[in-house]
Every structure is written in structure tokens, then in C-alpha cells.
Length: 484
Ligand SMILES: Cc1cc2nc3c(=O)[nH]c(=O)nc-3n(C[C@H](O)[C@H](O)[C@H](O)COP(=O)(O)O)c2cc1C
Image 1 (cartoon, protein in one colour):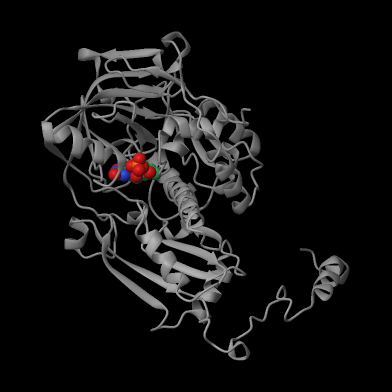
Image 2: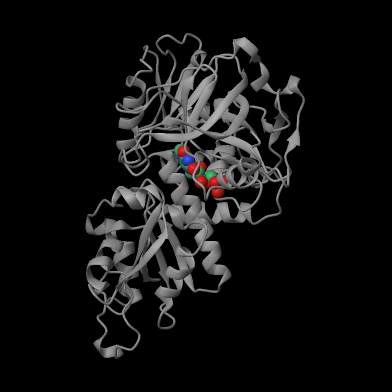
């Protein structure tokens, strides 16, 4: 049975407008930093998403900024009540992605709005598309910041990947950007195509429906198109590209087709990154040669402005990486109460709640998650008692400050896999994507005598206030004169 979902970004924009989660900007804005600055400030203030109706030099083009940078917008994208708590959103998401996968369906060109306009041959010119200068100091204009790149394995062509890999415009027919070697597309390109000097067909999709965007961002263990189907509860509609055999979401705004060229690099970056810093230097990066562009009438570009939290990359990666960790820890029968990756930490810090069932349980969690495929994206794991509300920053801070032993509770794991983007890493470690990790064990040791184990003094601890007292106080709260 299909869930409530939006077939394209236009329906999603309308839903956000209705719920008060969108600001429509009618006055003209400049693609050269003004648009980016508005999106940045909206992220930092948790404002509604800006929808730009008029962009300097680009009549007919519109832009949609910060599409999913708040929990409210993620809930709306999932067809849920905007105020759904994070743990309920997690449960619903897990329910969907653990149901049987749903294969996509192919639709004809006539039923694919992304084919309304076509540029091929000499007409291909990326400067006809509104690529913003997202941040001051960026190495160029970034057309693709909230998009997905579609690519297929050479050895197993049915293995098709959707992922987000930023792309900067280099010239009329060329884009460039980093593809990290541990990403799914990195593995395909560097391990299958490049060794035999074969260009890899790609299709960049801009302005796909929100659930396809969530899937592209997620560390999906199988086809993101089927994963999208699970999130939708019915097949996602795809259409064949004009110049290669790849299939792309039929209702997207813009499709850029071409080939990724092996053994050449074009200088890309610097760029304002998800860590909230400009870290990685200008360097030769992956090259995308463009052969064809298709787009809808009055296309709407989606723009993510990465920087100080919270943007959609931080929010969505925090969300989906935590869920994969939850699945991993549950598969090993670790008695966890939940996993929460804090978007405010740019997903560098993960809180895991666990029943303190046996000595060494925090280390077991540390080894499992640091040893997983997800590890490059975070370096701090904090293990807390299952009675701590992991979604409550105050409670986490209290455990961190009171239960973490400064020498016995902090464990460093050296020379792990990292990314070149870690601001704290020295330049050599950044160059090679090395990253140390740290485990904060915020559990009281089990070998302490019970009588000498400190007791938390809180309203909801039944050892402090019996349940009948708690219930009486809760039910009389407003009568006492309190508002909330
Ligand atoms: C907005 C955004 C931009 C990203 N940019 C890049 C990038 O430029 N290069 C990269 O390798 N990964 C980038 N990522 C991370 C990948 O998209 C991420 O690995 C994604 O989950 C794809 O997973 P997969 O590679 O395991 O399929 C970005 C993620 C987001 C949300």
C-alpha cells in the first residue's frame, strides 16, 4: 500500500507552503552569493525553506533552498505529521525499509516531465543552467549541491547506484568534483572503469522528489531506486536517459548526462563543507563530460548550502547512518535502547543508549560501529545508560560531565578511516583521509558495589520519587499554576 508521499518537488513545495515551512521570495535575487547567503542563514536559524521565484540573469528558472534541513521538513517528506518525534520517525522509517523491496517501473518519455526540454550537441551549455556561487571563497559555481549522480557497475550492470557527490561547473560541457574512494560510486569508478581506462556513463539528477533524495543520501545496502520504492510503498517511476542506458527519476527537474573520464583531474574547491568549515584544498578532482541536458519547463534548482549546522546533508546523514548502526547493533543482539547521531555535531558524534548488561559492552559497540562501512562519517561514540534520553542534549551533557572518567572512560582508536574533510586532522592525515576515533564510555563500571554506585537525582527516577508521587504531580501540574 502506498504511503503518503510527493511524486515531485513541486508537490513537496506546495505541502511545505501549506504547513508554513516555506518562504516564497518574489523579489529578484542574485545567484552570485545572495541566494547562497539566504539559504545559509535559513539553515542557521532553522527557518522555513526559501523558494526563489526570480533569479538574476536566469528568467524562467527558480530555486528551492534547504529542502530538508529541519526534522519538520523530513517528517513532511515522509508523509508524517510535522511534529512526529525523532524516535517515532526512526521506527516508521525502519518499518518501511525492512519491508520487501519494491522495484522501480520504467515510464515512457511522454510521461516523463524531465524530458520537456532537450539540449544536445553544440546546444549543451551548463551556463544556461542557474549554478549559484554558494559561498564566498568557493572555487567556482556549484550547480549540484542537492542532487544525485546515477552510475552503474561495469561488472554487474544491474547494480545501479544513486549518491550525492558535489559538482562544480568548469566550462560549458564539463563539471568536476570529489568522489571519495570508499563511496559506492568511488568503488565503481576507481576499481572497475579506471583500471581499464573506460569512461563511466553518469546521469546527474537535480530536483528529484524528496524520498529519492533521502535514498540517495542514505548508505543504502542495495539499489537506492528499490529503497525509494520501500519509502514510497510503491515503485518509483524512472525514464531512460537520451545518451546512455541509465534510468533516472521521471519527475525530476533537470537531468545532465555524460561520461566520467578516467585518469584526468580538474582543479576543484575550496568549498564550504558539511563540517561547517572550508577545509579541503583546491586539487585535481573527478571530471564529468556532459553530452546532453534535459529539463522541465520553468525548472526549479535545489540548493543545499553546507556549513554550520543544520543543513539537510547533516540532518539526513545523521538520520540514516544512525539507523544503519541501529540495525547493525541489533543484529548482534546488543541490548541497545537507541542510536542518535547528533546533526548539531555535523554527525561526528553518535550517542548509543544501552542496557549496561555486561562489562566491556561500550567497547563492543565502539568496535562494531568504528569497524563498519559507516565509519568515515563520524569519529566520536558516546555510550550511555538506556535510562538516558539520547535525543535530549541536556541529558547527554549531564552524563558526559558526570559519568565519563577522564582517564578510564576515554578510549582512542588510532589510524582509522576518515575523510579529507575533518577540520581537526593535520594536513597529512587529511590528504590520505585518515581519522582517529574516540569512544566515550559513560557507563558506571559493573564491578562497583551497588551501594557505592551514585544514584541519579531526577524527577522521573522511581528510586527518588515513587511512581504514585510522580503521577500525582504530573496530573496536578496545571492546577499548581504551571503552564507547561
Ligand atoms: C549534500 C551532500 C553532498 C555530498 N558530497 C559528496 C562529495 O562531494 N563526494 C563524496 O564522495 N561524497 C559526498 N557526499 C556523501 C555521499 O553522498 C554519501 O556517501 C552517500 O551516502 C552515498 O552513499 P554511497 O556512496 O554509500 O552510495 C555528500 C552527501 C551529501 C548529503
